Image (tube, rainbow, N blue to C red):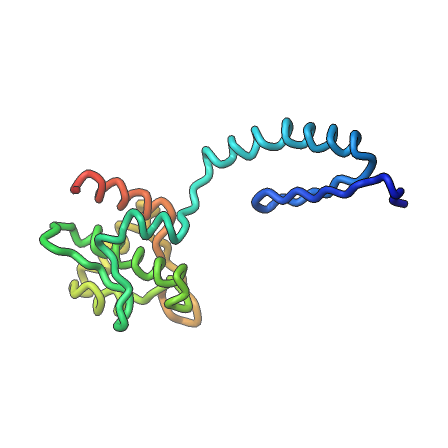
Length: 166
């Protein structure tokens, strides 16, 4: 039972929510203990967690990816990229379109990659196989369709390549 002198404080930090109820001094002590115990762990977890947001992806790749009425496109002006890099960049374009709610998912077929990059299907097939082995691309069979998607590691790899080339 809550007394008239009790207070209720709710703290929400990212995915964590906790309620503190009681007398003001007790609640203050509990909140301080919570911060002392939890915040260092949250900071440590943030240091080793990798999850690219839409804002981060657009910041990194906005010079190379554009969302057009025809679909997400790689946008290269006099930039030399290998077939692997072009494929990953196109997969990142699809992922950005998905995060921006311009597409219903970020998984695409090999034919779509070919149509959007202009690369030949045999070359794409070989490069996708290599990229899968490296962990940069994930392959899934959904409803008897083979679909490909960029992985977080693939995004990081291409980010490092782009940084070196600029």
